[in-house]
Image (cartoon, rainbow, N blue to C red):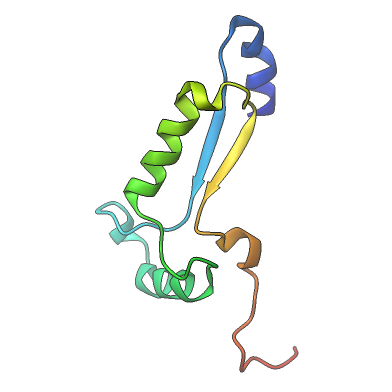
Length: 96
């Protein structure tokens, strides 16, 4: 993103990316363990739910709008905050 933003910025083109959390879609249904992944994220993510297609679409609409005119070269995580706490262990997990 940063390199594309640097290359295209002088032409007035902003470049950003969205990194979405797991979403239940037709194509995602082919991923082994998707149900467990969705259940884990819903419990661990700060918003205590999975993100939706609408959540991702809203973020994309924002990034494409003039409201984000000063944003370029960024990755926006639409994952309910999972990225910030995703490596946490279950309460009953002991050390090592």
